[in-house]
Image (cartoon, rainbow, N blue to C red; front, side):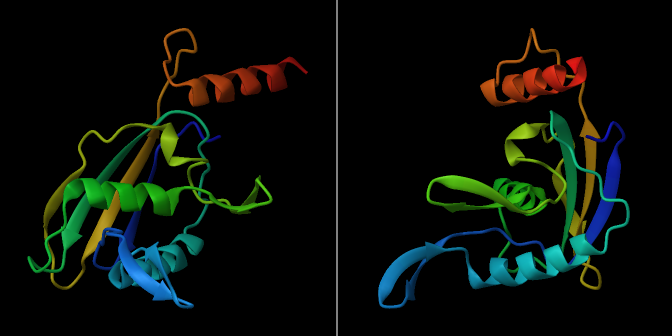
Length: 163
């Protein structure tokens, strides 16, 4: 767990998931949009290149400033936030009801995001569409926390420190 703030920039036109019904092997299933899947690929390629990428496992504040290529297909901010949260969170695969870590990114889970304060669509930048992200760890008081997930994580950390 990192105790310092971390900032990074991902270039590419920010996109939301906007699930759409897609035919796969003769069945209709919900998949993220093609635009999102392309953005996800670019985003993750750049994430691999981030130097000294920290890993957060308790409450954080995320501030994301989005710069769009143009006004065409103008996204909603909540959709952008959801996409960013998913992209910076660890990837798991579930097989036989068992959750297995596939890739460790920056957050153990997007559920640890306690605040999106300052997040906005900051403007247009035709030459360099991007998202500028800052993640700041928050001091979480186990006696005041309401999220059972975070309470469990904090208790697990305390038990580890006892040994």
